[in-house]
Structure formats: structure tokens, C-alpha cells
Image (cartoon, rainbow, N blue to C red; front, side, top):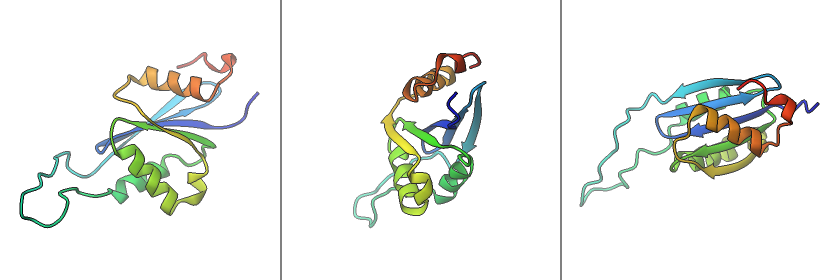
Length: 131
């Protein structure tokens, strides 16, 4: 039996859903951003891009929730997945090596997210019993 620990993460700027895929189940962890969900509006004739920038504290809490995994699939609907990938690459080299792929994914159900992870990581049939 394969003894690797897999995880899939779906992330946007408000929350991260992380599923640790084990031999017997898919354990969910949800990490919420402490930043407000409001988008900034950029006004003409002002300096700056109008973007809030990377929420480092949010990303650090997400990374803390990934401790113990061997392989990770990062997904999400917009820029947050790429921002997380870039942040991990810049600040957590050991974790960066565990990222198998970064893929665009809209808003799947939890069971669809787990099914995608099982298919992506080619989890053996005997490990698919509890979802």
C-alpha cells in the first residue's frame, strides 16, 4: 500500500479548503482570511495599483495546516492559488517541492474536490471507500 500523504487545497482570497487524503478518509480543514472580503476600488490619478497585496498571515496559517503532507495539489478560481504557490516558493522551499500542480478550478463541492484529488494522485481503489 502507498504510504504517501496527499492533500488538495482550494483557495481564494477569503478561505482555503484543505483535504488531507488518507487511506481511510478525507479530513477537511478550513482556514479563513482575517482580511475583509471587500475589493478595493482603484481611483484615477492615485498612486498604487489598487490591489491589497498578498495576505502573508493567511498564507502562513494555510501552510501550517499542510504540515505532514508529502504531495499537494493547489486549486482555486482566481489569483490566490498562484499567489500561494509563489509565496510558498519564495518562503518555504521544502513545502514548494511537495506541490505537484497548480490548477484553475471554479467552486466545486467538497466531494468533487476530494474525487479530483483521488483521481489526480491515482489513489488505489481500496483507498476510496470513505469520502
